[in-house]
Image 1 (spheres, rainbow, N blue to C red):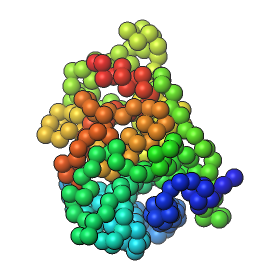
Image 2 (tube, protein in one colour):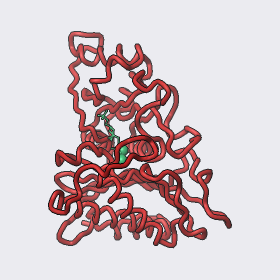
Image 3 (cartoon, rainbow, N blue to C red):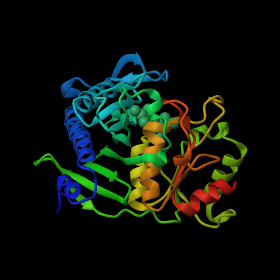
Length: 319
Ligand SMILES: O=P(O)(O)OC[C@H]1O[C@](O)(COP(=O)(O)O)[C@@H](O)[C@@H]1O
Ligand SMILES: [Mg+2]
Ligand SMILES: [Mg+2]
């Protein structure tokens, strides 16, 4: 079995990008080790601040953000970073060639119940003689050169794409190294499993309510087949399930917050997951367009997300 380093060395991935990927994923191993210490290290609970999006920050949101920021700013190939937990982009080395956007800890509400969380990252190529600005990051997801996540679950896993399919790696905790455990991930086009936060049902659009009602009606309704439901409450866990055994994941627009397009963030969550899903043969859309085609207007922009099994995403959009 090959290590991540060996897989990258044998690929056409530019060596500078390999450095960025190794820095990112090695830092995730450090985050994993910190998570495993849990209460023993005094790292659980709330930090007492809000992020730029008005969400309560957990101590681990800040710790994992600081760990990634510190490591990436010290990497000569990194031009700038953007994070869900930072108000503004953080310029690094002007001569660096890569921009990294990340959600340092996805599924924050799961931390205190010892359930699945993860780190999601998205990488763009960018050069220039001046320091990077927010504008440098505002590229559509089609321009990502790599995307992935590290899932801190019963085992620690890295799921990665550099635009040539999706590979899975499992952390060997004795060697502190990711080992390739799946070389080609494929999402089946059809499914009988969906993921959505049902408690928001009355706030969805009429069309979304009809679509989900038809799923719930199962074999007795127009779909004429039963559907199972799962909700990890961490996008990283729900997307991982879809990459492992298929399904559809939806975080739609809702009228609880009518002025925002959705809950999830385009740069840190939707774009990297959309690249992974498309690279595995699935689809990723908002209510009206392909996620990877969106021209971002701001680094903290939110979007509605409908992703997973290609035929089921099409079915949902047909409503
Ligand atoms: O609280 P809800 O509605 O179940 O939302 C869960 C969703 O929110 C998120 O936790 C948002 O991510 P953060 O934890 O990074 O803010 C997603 O991972 C997840 O899909
Ligand atoms: Mg998140
Ligand atoms: Mg987060």
